[in-house]
Image (cartoon, rainbow, N blue to C red; front, side, top):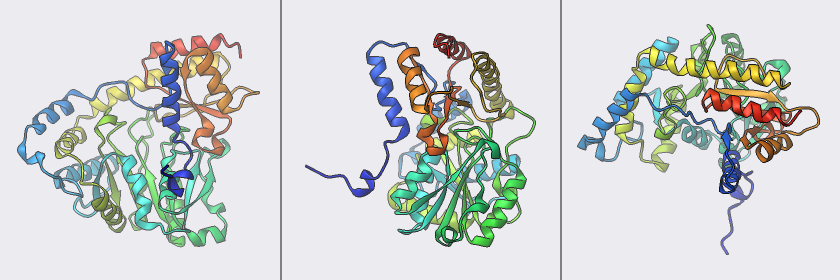
Length: 387
């Protein structure tokens, strides 16, 4: 009998793997599931990206090992995109590294800077990988509650002094998964000043920056003066360009932080397939209307779903970003209880808020990654519960 390592034993079940297990069980029973669980876009990757990939696959120079840091041409495309989108200057050679999807980079980053006993400040509720990557590196997560009354922003100034002495990294993620909250330049300005005073690395996950619907476009922490001294930012082509299966992302920012992550990557992977990176160059160069079409679809779904849910008495957190709805569970239910009832009685897959951390209790997350008609069908099924 082979025994798991202690680090594996200490891990909670990965949230979305557990949801997949329950989905398979229901599907095997012939249930017509409406899957509003994992945030996996249902729309196809834009055709110009696919066409670029087809051509790139045939190039013999892409059939060899890629560079560990990523093709310089892809990293230059990332730098160009950051300049256009955020007016942030990046050196593609030293301040950009290619990732095999941002999840990989987020999970590996603590290995470069965390020693056993070091503390990582993790938001709660949050994408589970911030905490899991910390545990893999032997670090200790210290949870920063995200509360609705604070706009789901962390109160980092409340971190006790004894915790600050051992803290090395703080994770932030805006637009936020799962709450859909956004952050302002003023928030990042305060955070950067605090991080510099306390010698803390700020790791920003910006995966949802292009999924927004109002006039105020989400901002990058790197737009703030001094951020390049303390910050690294993780981004992905997954959500922006419907490329979740392609596994292509990037980390940018402080060159020492980027280099540290790069050193981990040279020892654990051999880089991303260059044909995918070449397709990524096309993605990052697409006309804005391509991305706007994707945004328009999510905006229509969000507006229709918010209205329908309110009509059945469910309270949705108001936001103009991400393709998630963060919804309060009805009185008398825990998050897990209500989501289980939706699955068992309605054939609807949602994500319980407490799956993102203890402070997600009282909410559940709906992903808008199915057509509007199916979203409204889900609400019709919920109506029959007579909440």
